[in-house]
Length: 93
Image (cartoon, rainbow, N blue to C red; front, side, top):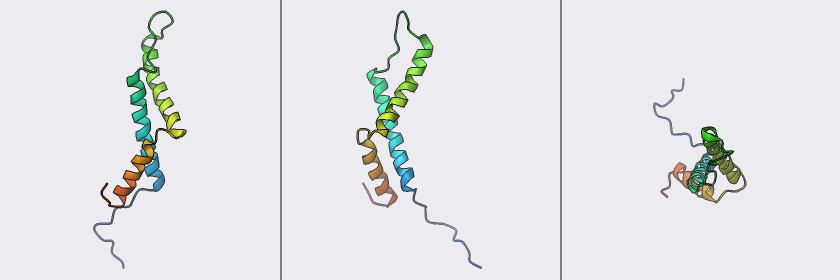
């Protein structure tokens, strides 16, 4: 009978998971930058959507950021993925 050791070595995350995490972080960063820049600012005055429009502009910024990342982004995901791979391998950045 083989006994399982009390402490197992950590299982490194799959490469796909690292890339998805890096892209998700780049997407979140870009969405916040778009929101801060006021790119999707709600319209005031006649024809403005009011509170509902303000809520949905946030969704629009998030989706635009995801689309940017899907098309290559600004390269932030590549840097993040590289750092995550180094950390997973035990190297110091």
